[in-house]
Length: 376
Image (cartoon, rainbow, N blue to C red):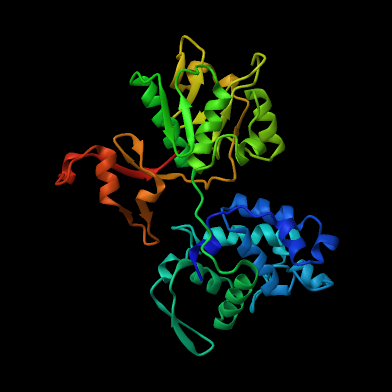
């Protein structure tokens, strides 16, 4: 069992998966794919784990017909060997409650957090074993039996091969790309900057939607005009925001994180509208024609453009929602440069730290300021 089986969110076409296994749920529970995808994205859980729970608890993916009881307790959440919690009854409620509960298992400080189980020995059914990782701990918190853990592993491997699910790029990766391009422009670069498979032309001033698209594509590691363009990006900021709304990407201002998208299409937005990358502390990255804030690839403040122009914030599900970042001299490190351990300790790879700070070999750690913390 691998942690990536449980989190972070990794996109899956659930309806296509159910078609592949000829699941009867496509006929009698047509909203199930949407419930699983939305709940998994909302709580940053791998949808494959939720599908595995449905099969483990009720044979709910393959049973020709589900009883009322099986539908009401589709994932077995709240139907314990002791009390039964009726507030979790109902198929849709089961999906969202299970995803929410699993997120609590993964959240340090929550009373249900299971990170402290790792490396410790637990006894169930008269058998004592060591809990190896947080996914294993979460499975045992969910159903405290070794046989249930074995069932979970068997089902997951049957359907998904037991492969390591590639970790998603994060919102912080998008933020890092946007800051890098704005810094290059501020330093006087009017040529090109290539990140991954994407080349930014710093002479193309005022192409705001292109800038946001390229930041996302560079962070995701895709080619230009690739799958993200097909799903979300159009020729103007106005049309891009419409596509983002239709794709269900809207998030409230209380949930926006650095690297999410911010649109400025309220009020007098003009024929094309405007769009940028949200940073933090009331700042955003943009490619603007405004002589006051730019023109060019700049970091601006909401009070400069006007809060009343903000028409929405949007999160692309291809990026894990990362509020946490390791920041060196104001620049977030790449996500693969550090490791967030379950015991609350953050390990930073020294070579990445040195490179980010421009330090030579033999650097003295106390000469640099390193901030480890969370976003807004």
